[in-house]
Image 1: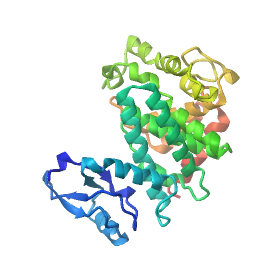
Image 2: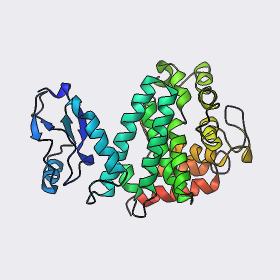
Image 3: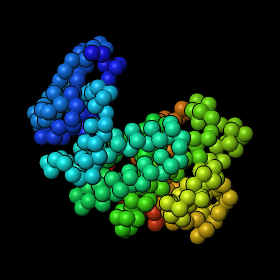
Length: 318
């Protein structure tokens, strides 16, 4: 059995006393060889997970045929079902894995019905987690990836948007809609050539003009659907608008920008500057908070900025 023939899964998603319905394999040393670690019907134990952690093992592997079973396990764990002993950190890791897997698949397919349906389902999963009384933002921050793939950015923005919506006092249903809107907010980027999205240097004027088309393109693709709310569509269309009118695509000012568009703008900027990009290294959380605070009242909604900063500060060491 070769590792290259298997699917990697995150150890952080494994919960004691639960089974994922697939055999688990581990890598043999630094080779491409894999050996059986745990049979499909044998649950992990806390001591097993502690041993893996002490050895620095973050990934195990499953056969491709076990992918659907693993995805079902992740959904159950993320939604709060399944193993009652699972921690919120494990539920957060499960949610992140589901979002990345499903969103990547739908983005690659570039099929709007599939993407919107996936966003609606995942919005409910995320809302059920971030709305829990015992939810801790720090658990979710620890498991997020920060590469520059569009689907990774969209997944992170959606989770951040859900946390901010919950902290602002929105209902669980509104949080669900906001998360789904966040997953769709950059849909228009799928029409932009990869050589522009992944350019290692700064964009020239013509390239930036192409980038600026993505809110309008995403809105155009989704506007006639009857399964999205106006607020969700404004997250797609207005997340690059600024309160002072200096944004795009149309230069909306102040209250012309929908509250959900303003919410999305805050977390979109934060996620972008704290993630790896081809042309720069990521900012620290403190630097990113300083940046969005400087834009408060000019580009960004002051109340939402301060609320988001309070969430970030709760995740930082005292």
